[in-house]
Length: 115
Length: 117
Image (cartoon, rainbow over all chains, first blue to last red; front, side):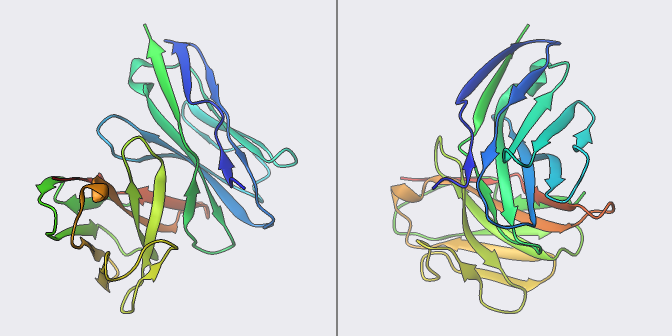
């Protein structure tokens, strides 16, 4: 079974609008972490935001926020006030276990921001 | 945040040859990892680079094909051996440490774009 599922292969949003990128996960661990990364066409992986399974509040980093719904096992990324530079691939990833473990990645969502 | 550099940034290699990719982190990190991203695909972990001992490989990856070294806490190398066109991918180094707020941070290098002809 897929550990991380991103059901949206592509998303379109107009500049200045908000957009939600979906991510659901599957784990039996109580302790885990969820990450979102942005990959522009240059290929680098840019860390955006992290949510720990025990964090009671949703993580926020500037225009990025993570809508963490633990019971539904979802960790959607919300980008507010989209900018043209937000056009990129976005990957959701999960780390299982309480210590440093590998990340398992979803298949990604390509976001295109139009003027 | 940790700054991670990789060399080379890209290379075009002939089949049957080997390429060694270097990864340097600007601060001591707990863990270092090597990932592969085949064209149009997501990232797949090759191995965890362990300082001073043999790397831990994921299923489908073997040491003879992808030998890894990590002589200290800030440096690691990945060699892609006896290359074939199927090895054409982006290879990314990743490093992780605990953030100041107690959360985990895991960063990636800029990647090495490898094309095998």
